[in-house]
Image (cartoon, rainbow, N blue to C red; front, top):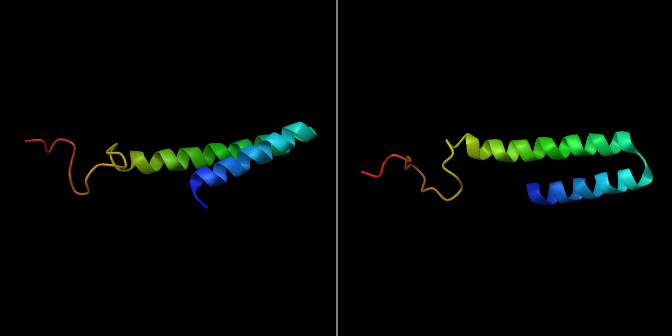
Length: 64
């Protein structure tokens, strides 16, 4: 299951929890969603903001 699928699943769980009035569960699920989003964002930050399409081994200032 990809991060996007996990987030979509958790969003649905949060929606149902809010609909049922279980605000504690909804907030806990939203915290899980936020952690997943942050961990996904940190993957790109750890690559020195090169992004997913940068050629491996090439540094951003190797344009010379």
